[in-house]
Image 1 (tube, rainbow, N blue to C red):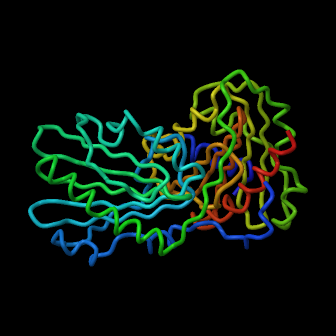
Image 2 (cartoon, one colour; image 1 turned 90 degrees about the vertical axis):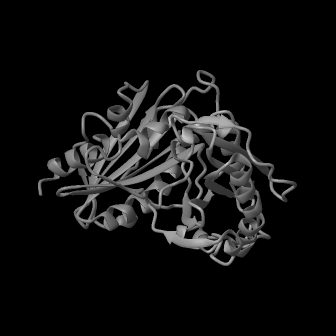
Length: 356
C-alpha cells in the first residue's frame, strides 16, 4: 500500500466518526487484567441473590462525564433477583479525587434523560474522597451509585432496583467488599500534577520542538519519514484551527504508519472530550475498541482509543500538558499492532514535551 494512502488512512480512520523515590521499588503500569482481580465476586454478592453475571462491553464507566480517561479499567455486571442489577467498575487515574469533583452536580451525564435524587449514604469509608447519587425517570425505578477514590484508583458501584432506599442500600452494602478488592491489587499513591492552567495564563513554546524525531524513533528500527497530512486528527475532531501546530509522519519497519501532531489550543484539557467514545469522532461509522494502555504519564489529561473499519485498523492517543495537545495515531495491518505501537510511542511523545 502506498505510504501517502496509509497516512491518509491513519488520519481519516480516527477523525471520522519527576524523579522516582529511591527507597520505593519501581512499579509497572496498572493493567486492566490486574484490575479485574479487584472486582467483587459472586460470593460477595451472595446476600443479594445473584442470578447471573452479564457479559458487558469493557469501556470506562465514567466515560465522557469526567475530563480524563483511565489508563486501565475493569468492569463487571450482574443481574440479581427481583429484576435488580449491579455494576462494579475499577479505574485508575492520575488524579482520581479530581474526577469525583468533576462528576459532582452533573451525574445526569451518566444517564441522560433522568432526574437526580439524593444518593445513598456510604458511611465512613477509609478513602480519599467519595460521592454518591441516584437517578430516576418515574420516581419508582432508580439507578443509584457511589464512587470512591483510594490512591490511584476509582471504585464505582451502581445498582438498578425499585425504590430509592432499596437501590441505595445495595450500593452502600457492597462498598466494603469493593474496597477489599482494592487491597488485593494494592493501593498506590496518586501522582499529583500542578493545577490545570487557566486559559491564557500559559504561553507555549514552539510545538515543533515537541514533535517526534527520527532520533526519538531509533528504537523502532528502520523508519522512513513521510509527507504529513495537511490537517491533524485534533483539527478534524475539534473543527478548530490551533494557535500553533507541528505535524510529522513516519513509516515503521513493519509497514505501520504513524502521524504525530503537537498543537496549542485554548483550554486544551477541556477539549479532549471530543476523543471519547460518546462523540463518535474517533471511530465514525466503524467500531470503537478499548485503546492502548501506557500507564500514568506526566500530563494533565490522557485518552486513548482504537477503531476498526473495513480494511482499516488503527489506534490513537492524545495527551494534554498545559495548552499543548499531543496526538499519536497509528494505522496498521492489525488492531493489535496499532495498539502496541501507540503504547510504545506515547511515552516518547510525552518526553518530547519536555523540550518545549
